[in-house]
Image 1 (cartoon, rainbow, N blue to C red):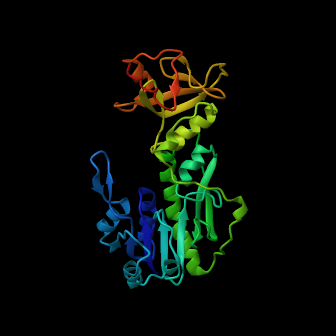
Image 2 (cartoon, helix red, strand yellow):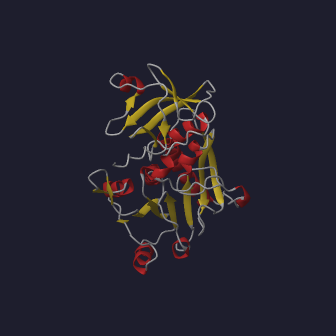
Image 3 (tube, helix red, strand yellow):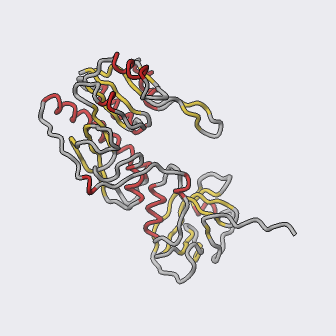
Length: 319
């Protein structure tokens, strides 16, 4: 078949790579425009564009997909099917109805749970023990189409969103190829989602990284894992913002204000929460690199009784 692939981030690369090794022909690729990245705001191509360039496959990077020029260019590729993995935009009817076999999406959750832009992160944040990949026929809703294939994957206790995503992406590539093969063979039956069971996974913002110390230690630890590598969980110790990259629940139920440091060991800083104790193990204070707590304590002093807050203290007003 003639397939057009639509995708953007690193998560989409295994899907495209799997298609390129399949019996079908990727005739064109659609990805997001290059974006400024890093401290220098260097214009950076998305990972899928790099694959397209490497393989010599025609590609488009439209800033708008609801314009006649893009639809005409897409139609010129004459796709039998459009495959989509993390493209980053909701497709509308003229695109969805263009290919005779429709549009197939690879989604990083066990639908109908975690519809939206950040299913991997929210599954970890919410402490799920498993997640998975769902392939589905796309409609005009946000991840609401009829499901085709689904396979689960274990979320290990030490997993972060960053460590889980590559495993899911690899599974997505394999499931996409199997889905297309079974669609061609007529051996797959779409199943309508139970919309009553749907949950959402909205895009993450930097503000989602603020640690709420009144929450339980287990939920904070899960949030730290789910927000790694982006946007990262953080709190303020005095005027200094600390990113927290690794933290685990520790025994104890201290009767102090949540956010208070209750013990400092050679390997961790123990902080009271709304329910239990959180052991900080890897941190990144302002203007510093990521450090284990042991590395940080080798050159800095942290005292029992100091307090983490969601915001830095207000500056004193001049006399």
